[in-house]
Amino acid sequence: MHKFFMLLVFVLGFQTFQSQVLFETMESSILGETRELKIQLPSNYNPEDKTEYPIIIVFDGDYLFEPVIGNVNYQSYWGEMPKCIVVGINQASSREVDFFYDDETYFPAHEGARFFEFVGVELIPYIESKFKASKFRIGVGHNLSANFMNYYVFKEFPIFRAFVEFSPDLAPEMANRLEQRLNNIPIDTFFYLATAENDLGNLNQSIVNLDKTLSVIENPKLHYRFDNFDDANHYSLVGLAIPKAMNQIFSLYKPINKKEYTENVLPYEGSPYEYLMKKYEDIELFYGFEKQVVEIDLKAIAAASKKKGDMESLKNVSKLAKKEYPDSMISAYYQGMYYEEEGNMKKALQYYQSGLMLNESEYIDKDMLLEKVYSIKDQN
Image 1 (spheres, rainbow, N blue to C red):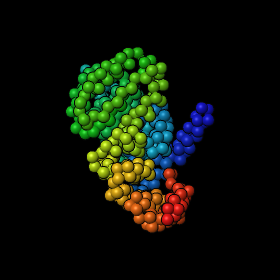
Image 2 (spheres, rainbow, N blue to C red):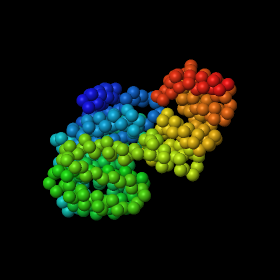
Image 3 (tube, rainbow, N blue to C red):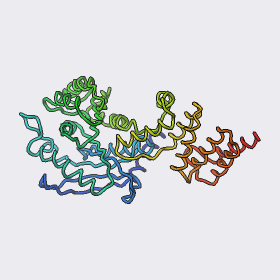
Image 4 (tube, helix red, strand yellow):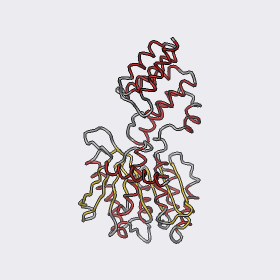
């Protein structure tokens, strides 16, 4: 167990080192002052590359930025979520005024209203002008900042597609207002809410009550998850909740696992290849950027094609593998598999042998190709 945690610390530390963390001071005409930002760019970020990355805006960045980037680095390392641009707003000396709301209307007022505008009118355009950012944006907040993020839900076109709220200190009428808005929100919106049994004061009860309100909403555009952690408090729940939130938000992005293969891929009415194409089209539609087809998904779809005897689907998988990974053994392996299933052993042998000159991949190496070569030769 100790070795596992040492490995985990190494991976997170290595990824943080490889990623580019910038500390910037931003002038704000709306606030009439400067603001300190922490910005982590994805590892190997290249401004000349066409790849666009989701933006994660972390309120209370003084203490919330580091646990967020640790989780983002770890999950993106394993392909469970995309690499992201993470922006932390330092607010230790200003959070009370930043999150101020009127005690009659319960909406942002004075400094709170200015900070509300600062995020949408100045901060996000500033980040988008400097970096390769997609339009998929996530807001992350805790306590006062978690409540404050809700005000962006009420905009006609919310600036965030995903709201991650840890133990929000809810303003009066917030629950009723959220119910009305989320019942009718017109775009796909992810909403994550978390509390803990040992949360501060009466926060746990108010958040549990909010969950009872939101959990019955039937709007298909709302993607909602709630966690009430046992044996955690107002502060420790954050470490438990961040990976849960990212799992919920990027559930569609994840590679095909055994459950998806069994419950979705095999029973799919169309071909396995059509399922794969739809999955990646949905990823682009939901998240606003293209994802390269990953090897494990090619493996799953090829297996499903063979199981269902769908040679056309397997042929399309082999073509896609060649297109996406022309210098990898993947391309030769799946082309060889297609011809082997077709019974054209001569062609299959040619492709398997040609793959020996290409680069090994995560799942395919020389030993696998040689095994295929020897097997075909033994049969003939």
